[in-house]
Amino acid sequence: MSQQPSRSRSKIEDILSLSPLQEGFLFLSLFHTDGPDVYVSQVSFDLEGPFDAARMRAAGQALLQRHANLRAGFRQRKNGSWAQLVLREVTLPFAEADLSGLAEDEQRAEAARLAAADRAERFDLGRPPLLRFTAVRLDENRVRLVMTNHHIVLDGWSMPVLLRELMTLYAATDGGASAPAETVLPRVRPYRDYLTWLDGRDREAARRAWTASLSD
Image 1 (cartoon, one colour):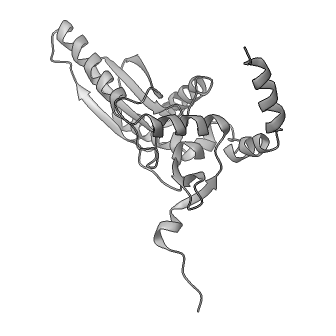
Image 2 (tube, rainbow, N blue to C red; image 1 turned 90 degrees about the vertical axis):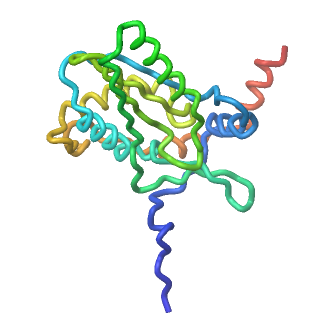
Image 3 (tube, rainbow, N blue to C red; image 1 turned 45 degrees about the vertical axis):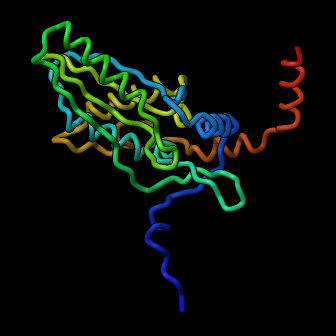
């Protein structure tokens, strides 16, 4: 008798290795479990003009579907090694706050408090996505968009690319449903290709080079 795939198995799109940098972030997150995670990053910016929260949520969701590594959680195998489990579908955490009724000083303080509290909240690295948004309404024509993520899935070089894609997808949404990303953005090169390239590097040569560089 053939066995049907389990329900949990069907939710997994891919299983990937970790890059050396991700291994480092994972170790530090597991080692320092008290207090905020210093590798939780945050960027915020004000958007002026009409803002549609449903459209932005849909754009962010489309971004997760576009990039497999943004749907990855980190799990330990029975042999002790770690892997990235890419889920087929994840739901983007998207919160909203309306501070438009507050006085300017109160508004500034509360917006800062909300952002700080969000950054202080640790991610469970085993539960993707390791990315969340908060839209803070400041007045009728201004919203502060706060994006918080773990450094293990997104670095500073990637941030401008991600935000540019987010705004492109936001502009292409209609009625709260995002246009297919492939119709408005170039095709994504699979993250697996990058990991394959890393696996082909000479780690011993790299270790010797860094050992010599850091010897003093």
